[in-house]
Structures are given as C-alpha cells and as structure tokens.
Length: 507
Image (tube, rainbow, N blue to C red; front, top):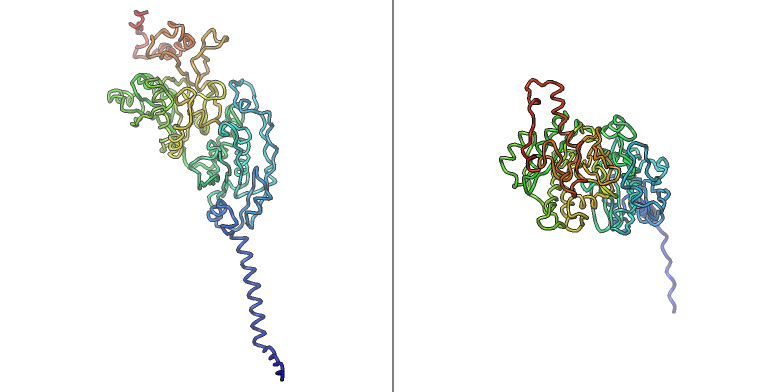
C-alpha cells in the first residue's frame, strides 16, 4: 500500500526575514567587491607601474594620459576612478633627421629656427597625474632617434603644462616609460627614477628642472635662450621661480697625470677672478700634482680637491687622452647645483656668471653634431656619475677621450654661443688672417700652449702642422692687460719694464 505524500510545512515569517536579509547582504557585498575591484586594482589585473603609482599617491582618482600607445588595450588593463585619455599629436616628419636638429654650424647673429616637432593641444588634456609612454627604439640604440625625442618632449610638456607645478609637493606627478631603450636621461634624470623593472621605468620628476628642458630648443639648430630669444630676465623668472635661496655654483677644472697644465690653471683662475666672478673656483687634482704646485694653485684662487684619476678605456696607452675620463669626477661635486667645467688651456676675458642659468648639458658646438667638452654646464649628481662609470665600459668614444664619450651619452645637448669657448683654430679658407673676435668670453688655446711658447710670439707659427692654431691676435689678448696698466699709469711702474723673453734666442 503506497504511503501518502507528506505535506511541506509553510515557511515561517522569521525564516522569510532571514532569507531577505541574506539576499540584501549578498547584493551589498557583491557591490562592495565591484567597487573595490575598480578603485583598488588587484595585481592580477593591473600593471606593476600602476600599483606603485597608486601606492605613492594614495588616491583613487588618478588621471592618466597615454602617449604613443594603444589606448583601448591599455585602458582595459588599468582601473581608476580618474580619467584616462589617449594623447593625440602629429608624428614628426620622416624627412627630418638628427643632423637637421644638430647641424655643424648655424648663423648665431640671425634668428635661426629648428625643424618643428609637433606637440599635442595641451589644453585638451587638463591636469594629468601620470603620463605613460611607449618609447620608440630603432637603430643606434635609439639614442639619436628624432621620434624618440619627440615622444620624450611630449611627456615632459604634458607634465609641465598640466597645472601641477604649484602643488607638485602635495600632489606629485609621474612619468612612466615602456620599451627596451627607456627614456632620455637628458630630460628625465636618473636621480628621479622611482622604480625600474623589465622594460618599465617610473619617474617622479622635479618639475622645475623639467620645465627648464621644455624651454630649450629641440636641438643645437638654435641658440639656447635667453641670449638668443627670450631675454635673460624672462628666462630667470621661468627657471628660478621655485628656487629656495641662491643656487650653489662653481667653476671647475681638472689636473691629472702630469703638471703640464699647472701654469694654465693658474692663469685660468686669475682670469676668472679678474672678470669679477662671484662663483667658487674648484680644482680637482690627482696625486701626480705636487704639493708645491698645489700651494701655487691655492694662491691663484682654487679650492683643491684630491681625486683618483680614471683611465679612458678606448684610448691608446700613453696617449695624451689616456686618463681624460678623470673629467667625469666633476659629477661628484654634489655640494653644487651647477658647475661650469673649463679646461685649463682656456683664458676668460669677460664675465661668464650669467651663463650658469643654462641647464645640463650646455656647450659650444665642435663639428658635425657634437659639442666641445672644453667648456660645459653640468649638474652634479652621484647617480649620474655612477651611470657614466658603467657606460664608459660599453659606450665607445670616437677620439678615445672624454669628448667622444660624453657626446655619445649626451646626444641631446644645448648650444651656447661660440664666443664662450672660442677655439683657437683656423683650418678654414676664410680664416687666413687668423684673427680672434674681440667680443669673445673665453679663448681656448689649441695647439702649443701660451706657457710653452714665447711671451710676445705664438710659436705655433714655427711648425707647419701647428699653424692652424697660430694667431697674433690671440697673443695680443694676453698683452692687453699690460697696455691697460700703462694707459692707467699704475703707480707700481711694472708696465715700464721691457719684456725680453730669453726663449726667443732659440728661434
């Protein structure tokens, strides 16, 4: 006999309330998970760089701009309550080459313009907290790639023009670079590197320094302001607005391996002092410079710092430039914000102090696309020094010395007027008079040095191979102070003494 089916008991009211409460709780919990997933991204769904930036900012609203990237793909990987935008700009004309940005020669007396590197319409993007860029990398390790420069300048301009300059301390900005070549360290300093992993770099840049860079021309195709375009006072307002106190600055030279340039360094110090400079004078000397010479150098005005010399890995043994990489020690002078390095075979004829306003690396052109390292503006940094020491072992030098190396690691540099480092060189047809311009700021004595020649005659004339360095007018520059003393009738009367250099007897 079949049993009767049992009757189900009706749900009690408390049980119904429990189910309703459980449903409400589940809905609220799932909503909370959804919000947390989008406002606090999980490592499985977000790139590492975003996690680090979000942790640094401690903010749910992070505005991100993407440069040279697929915006649709990247926004699927990143979750933020802030806006995410793909930055649009026209690519630089493929016909523009690096030699167009860094020509061998420009007419410094006329208004020269560089080729255009198109920029975004910055007002379309507002305040961005992070700019993420994919760095192009092709040929020559990408170091002299015009499109790479354009991408780096787009990132720099977006950060500077994004309206965060005033509150960059309370709300910092970040630059993220993706690609095997990495960013240009001429613009984004290694000191500002926050994190590096694989092909990703995160920078927390000091916007004041980046702002200086975006005011520079795109290459040496144009003289750097203020002296060419914007005016010195305008430049100072732009670049020093956020400075606290006066910058720490110095002139620096280096002596190593022999005492051949001691006389030149003494004359250099005195020429800087007589120009009424207000900067410190620092001389780096290795142990080949005797205490007797050190005493004379101190008396001339130099503050002495002892260094250990650095060998040039690509020079010949016993060559003149075998230990020229000792010049890299200038980046260790962290007690200064900027230094102007000057070789010891230069003489300063006019005050150079105003030119400290320029950023690293500013120099005078040499030939082709390179600069002359005999005078250059440098910003000391232990990080930069360590990087240079590593690069010296893998980066070549066209001349085996410091100039070839520095031009490889600083391919993007800023052109100073040639008269700041007037090369005593007359290798062109139009230089048949071998005359030095009267409005120069410093003369660079190439060839046989003045202290090796006669006081009233340039011995570079005596050898056919050195005549390209010979100049009567250069010697006149040395004699001009004697003439001034005579015209002023200095009471000591030394200007009356007739100079007869006994070394002339060997002619």
